[in-house]
Image (tube, rainbow, N blue to C red; front, side):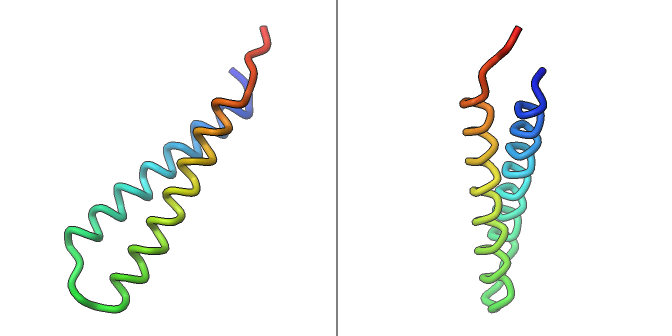
Length: 64
């Protein structure tokens, strides 16, 4: 397995974790300013990590 693919898988898992954490915060949120800021921050970071990880996995060629 390639090092780039491992790093891509790690980024993908971190992105999924960030998106799940955002969903948990969304379900348990009240109408506070802190909740909205943390939802935006964790959601954007989760999406960025997920997309970066998936694209890194897809664009890395297998070398035998």
